[in-house]
Image (cartoon, one colour):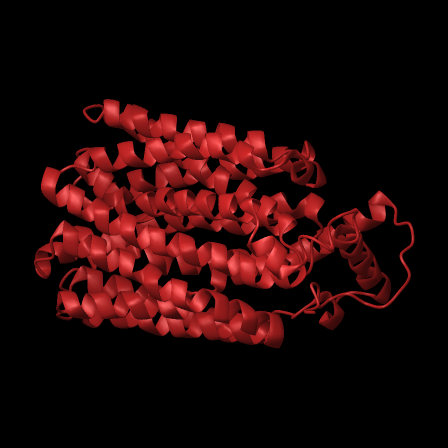
Length: 444
């Protein structure tokens, strides 16, 4: 059987004071979370900057919304294909080599997108980017289970996931600025400069990651023997709870259970909602009347900023109350309601942006609660494969949704119908989450 936590050390379990365990986990969090946060910011900037480039290169390269939707979505086909193998490599060879390899490859490919000149090249580059980046998010989620116990997991997941809105807060104005000010500098279009400038930092940080990250607590020289013992004991307690190690740690049992199917569907819906924002938000803001590239970047950053604050507060509340299902359901309802507000007020920019902000708060809050739930349900070898498989299926559904979104906008010249579809799916997810059993909820 695969070792569920490579950082465990041999020792007898013994009582640990809350103050002592809090001290150790704070120490771990301050060491690894900021760097993982930076990695996620760079990943999201390089993943979603295509949404800003669309405002300019669609005209330069005569790409329709259907072509853009296909190109944005084909990223997730490559992502899906590499998810599970990458997670297995991370578990076997460690996070240092895996995360470093992912970052260097995606940074090179992202910067190389400046050479796109046809729809075929667009599809190839996006597929390659997904193939390179695949495994990053599920790999990091798995990696964090080696360091943090379940009662701290929603907060620890929320912090790197907050990189998604932070990437928007940073990337939106930056991308808008580069598109505007670097246009036709030295014969290159603004979108070409944007891809080049935003891709290089990922390569640099990828090299640093190899030397900075530790594969597990056991390898961390900055932890004392007592610190390692505390982490090992807390993680061991998680997997020795009654009825946990023999059921959810068993790969066949966990991955064929109805609970796992519900988790897949919930993440698929989450993928559709998140991608709708990530890849279409600049266009949605453009359709609301903000056509200036710099102004578009600033307005686009508002929903991201609100979501970054909201999702952390939501994750903290979920951990503190040891409750997942209602936190997920309420967040999904808020997200769907925000989209309905936007659709009903497309002629009033301030209200529409407020609706988008509420929607994104709900969407990302669902994401952090979902992964806290999933990484608690899946244990040992089931976690290695299960986390990646959930993400892979969601990637396939996301590809289809982005292609559909592009086709809808081409046909209707509006994003409103696509937003209605996402809202309906989020209402469905709010109901579906209660199919998850209460005993899992209590263990969280």
